[in-house]
Length: 451
Image 1 (cartoon, rainbow, N blue to C red):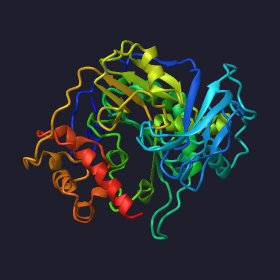
Image 2 (cartoon, helix red, strand yellow):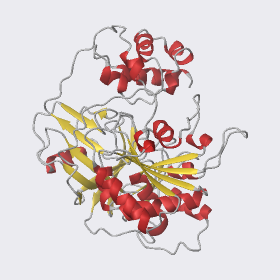
Image 3 (tube, helix red, strand yellow):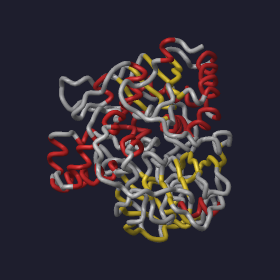
Image 4 (cartoon, rainbow, N blue to C red):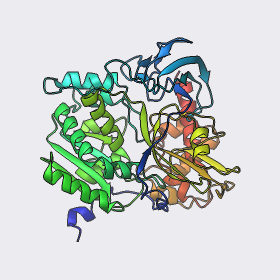
């Protein structure tokens, strides 16, 4: 029987319960895929300034070699996922974000030869925390749950105001995986349990945090049991495994912090560190551990490939820069795909074509034949989007203002910039309004206005 605390491990406002759709892949172990003949590595796979290419056409590169150097504090290095030769460097519009981004295209030589100093175990007993953060920065690790925020910045936060808290007291590993149809994090938790616990212990050491939490939705009882056993036997001191109510968006950073600690991240630019918290997705935590212990840059990631258009759905370890087209063809995609999504069905981005490369923050490829794309209608003022917004915003008013180009009023009166684009409003809307689409449009217009 669940304890009283376990029954309350959720956020207080809003949320929805979409069909989980995880049955086809949750029982399928992660498989390491063969490297493709060509990879296309984008120079911006993260929030912040894009990396600058440091290789040229016809250059020979090794696996793990730096090919894009971070520019600025909030940026991330980019590395080659294969050994081979640089075929070309070009700007690409057809990428998962829809933005024009520089890309380094590399022909794989099939030798799988690592760059010197990469993928070798090192003795970390003499490393101080600054050296560990530097290792994470050099490895180009970013948030792999979707946000793609550079991880070294989160490990070494700089308070915006002297009065703001910058001390991390609680580290949270996000194992909620509340996005429908995605199961690669679930598989990681089952197959790399001890490694994730070790990663959490490392992050707690770096930040000086006294408490660690692993939050997992109760639809993954095997993962909860595995972590409870691992923390009881291994490095589990001051680490709690907390079951979470199955509720979308339980894995969103702000909602997860409230569910596990009862604290609320302040609105208006507040960060988790302002309430003493640091949150990392399970895949990100493993990448941090790999960077510190094994000098391994982030060149691959776990990925769920699913949907009724996929002949052989599953969970895979894929190299960054592998094209969606290559992955889907390998798994037997149907010819008539009606909807192709980079990410999950709630927060993912629909793709116009499959000729796009895998990036660090993408945990899923969803291909659907039977997707129903409804025509949106005028807002009927039912208020369901307001009732279900986990941040207590008024998506109905924001969407109407956006339709009429009233960007500044959306920002100043209805706090559009606070929206995390979780998709609860669009999902619950009986008029099938594309509210999140309009919110993204509004944010883009405001960014352009502000220069």
